[in-house]
Every structure is written in C-alpha cells, then in structure tokens.
Length: 391
Ligand code: BGC
Image (cartoon, protein in one colour):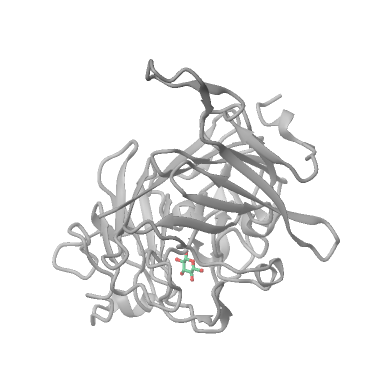
C-alpha cells in the first residue's frame, strides 16, 4: 500500500471558510499591553466557480497571506485562476492570465495557469520506448505529443483538500492517472501542494508514485504579466535566467539533443534584460519558436534560483527557484487576440510569459538527457517557488 492510497475518494464538505491559525490568540510581547488580540487570519475561502457539463461542481479556493497576496485555484486542472500581488505603491492587482468563468477554461485555452502532466512539454513523434515496449501517445501538436496529450492533467478533476493545521495556508491536490491513460503506462498517484507563505512565496510541491515504470515531467503553466494590466504586452518586462546553455529545437520544437551555449545569442539571459530586446532577432531558433519558446539548462543543482522577472513600471519583482534541471521560457507567441481577457478585451500576442520548471522536453527519446523515468518504489519529487517583492 503506498502513501497515496489513503487520499483516494476524499470527500469535501460544503462551502466553508477555514481560518488557519487564527483560532489561537496571541499575547502581545509588550508588557504594558495585557489584553490579547487575534493573530491576522490566514484564510482559505471556498466558493463555487462553475458547473461542468456533467453537472459536477467546480470550486475555487483562495489562499490569502498577511501581506495582501491572494492566489485562487480551481479543482479543474488544478488551475491558478488568479494571483493578486501588490505593486510598489501597495495596489493589489491580478498578474496571471486566465478567465472569469469555467466555460472559457473548457474551450481548450492554452493551458492558462494549469498543472501539466503526465509529461509536460513535447515528446517527439508522440511515442517513446520503455523497457523494450513502444508507447504511442496522442498527436495533439502536429506529429508530437504536447503537455500530456488530449486530456492531460490540465483538464482533469483534482481533489482539493485545504490543509488547516499547517503554518501556511495550503491546498493539497491529488489525482490518480490510470494505467495507460493518454497512452502512459502505470497507475500514477500525484500529489501537488500549493503553499502561500508570509514571505510572499507561492510554493508548488509535486510528488508522484507509480506501480509500473513510466515517465513523468510535471510543471505549472501560469502566464504572468507583472504589470497587472493584460492589455499591455510583456515585452518591456525584464527576465533573467540562470543558465549558460539552452536546448535548440527543430521546426516542430523538439530538442535536437544539443545543449548550446547562450553566449553571444539572443538566449543569453544571464544578465536581466527586457523580453523584447532580442525577441525579433534573426536567429533561426527565434523564428522556430515565433519568439522564445525554449528550454534553458539551469546552472547548478538542488533548490536554486532559476529565473527572475521584473516590471519597472509597477515595481513588481518575482524570483523563481526550483530543484528541476531546466526551465521552459515561453513568451505567449501563440496568443492571437481571440481569447477573452479577465479585465475586458482579449489576450493579444505576447501579453503573458511562462516560466515552466521541468526536465528537458523529449527526454524519453533522448538517452543523454537527465532521465524522466519513474519506477515502482521511487518517489518523484519536484519543487518550485515563486517569490514576490517590489523594487
Ligand atoms: C509550449 C508552447 C506551447 C504552449 C501552449 C508552452 O509550454 O512551450 O510551445 O504553445 O505551452 O500554451
């Protein structure tokens, strides 16, 4: 029996407001003050977000910290539907692309805010061989498989359990991906924690176990626009990526197998620069991606800085850390003004960017890349943090 079995079949209570930690009163340190006052409440709200075609209800859970940061998550796709962060003047605005209603999320949006699996990013020719058996996947991106197939983890129902006894407001999301779901072998039990801390960090922790050898590459597909104004492009926002090399790709965005130095190329983000600075460069790799849509090989290992992003106008600054070997930086090149924006209008070209921590794309077909294989008895474990401040 593995540690995920007890999670199956978890049932949820009806609409409730959970006050974490606030039950305890705290005595003030100052000797002159004798009365007690309540500790600021870490809250998790739960509300109805929408109703699925089969009449099941989708809820939105909102985590709040003491500094005005709020993150909302739905149990469809584990999607982060909004993330509200103050600018340098204390104005709290939503900085992630998404929709106002469930219906729009059901119309195949480009993975806005979603959890991605079983295999994030592309697998070439939509197939791979593991222990001598070939596995055929859905070709949902030309000839390739993208983000787990036709119905990846971004389109399934996740059980969500608010954790009331931890130090920080936390959501525990669980999902069992059945053996051969979307063509992948093994029952995969997945557990993701979204944790919002008072040092303004949103932590995403992933764990998974399997009962047959399989491949796993989980990530989070939030599109950021740090300006909080979705009518603006992200081209003036600045990004740094802690990487000396990146993975050049074929025309269909499958890594060639080479790790190429970023030195002297538009892919050099070792010093922070505006996203727009080199995005129209004549480099063939830029034309393949229609902008940046590549995987950078991160320097170092263990939990370390992967990337930063900064919007000089609002002052919002984000630091991304991870224990993953790589990060996909995607600049919203496929946004084309057809999807309705939360604040009105539509999401135009390059109005959001993604920083998706992960293993390399197409690893199951590239023996030289770090392995994405997970065997029975092993625990897949991945962690990414997004920390917000202003400057
Ligand atoms: C990929 C893009 C893809 C996008 C879909 C990104 O992770 O790198 O190529 O178009 O997801 O929204």
